[in-house]
Image 1 (spheres, protein in one colour):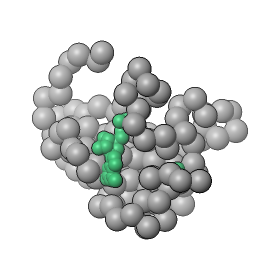
Image 2 (image 1 turned 90 degrees about the vertical axis):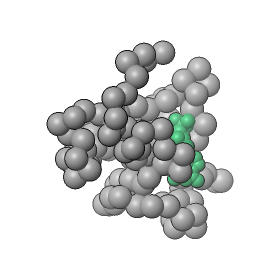
Image 3 (image 1 turned 30 degrees about the vertical axis):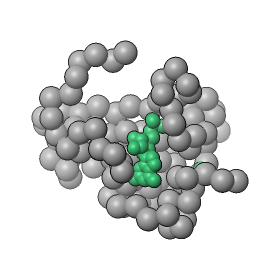
Image 4 (image 1 turned 45 degrees about the vertical axis):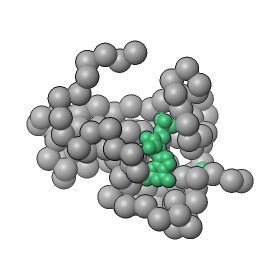
Length: 113
Ligand code: 5GP
Ligand code: ZN
């Protein structure tokens, strides 16, 4: 399967890693929208939130643990941050490997849509 983020996890495409463990990989977004813009992804390929089930949802909880840990490490836990996952065309999803944007380091726009 031809998936950009699977290739990043494998190391076939370079990325700036900020965290890795058995189930999760996190790296800097190539086109940052905020001073802190990290993508947190499951190593197992899921296309979007649409693929989340009772069988695989533990990794989502773990991704939020990693988000909280990275927010502390990157110094935005007190100032605030946003965790976003775009699902499908109307949300503007462009890469179809489930990912969570961790955004912070500035006052983020309040508009959600
Ligand atoms: P989406 O629009 O699907 O929610 O988010 C995809 C994100 O992946 C975008 O913020 C985009 O900048 C980022 N992105 C796309 N290609 C690459 C890449 O090759 N490397 C990295 N680090 N980020 C990428
Ligand atoms: Zn993938």
